[in-house]
Amino acid sequence: MKYDLTNIDLCNSQYFRGHHLPVVQVLVDENTTYKDVKLALLDTYSSIDHLEDIDTEAYVEAVNAFFENFTSLDYVPDSFCDIGSAEENEEHDVYMYFVIETVEED
Image 1 (cartoon, rainbow, N blue to C red):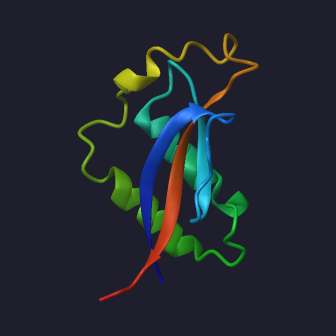
Image 2 (image 1 turned 45 degrees about the vertical axis):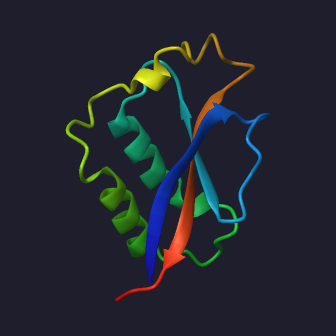
């Protein structure tokens, strides 16, 4: 089993239109680093929608592959800087959305 993880959106849950593939979301704010996103993805694999029998090892490999070419995981993306703090966004939390696609192995 092999998965491909793709970031598809950064928005409030009211604006997310969903996806036909399984989706995992990570809560972000102006202080969230890529390392925080990665750790949240690894922490939330058991609650992923539409994948009841997720292959944990394949999911972890997909998360690691997504971040393998990042220069620094301690970096806060520019797109997060305008979000504000978690306290400021309490009613309008912002999430980074990822889809998980099962891909054929070679």
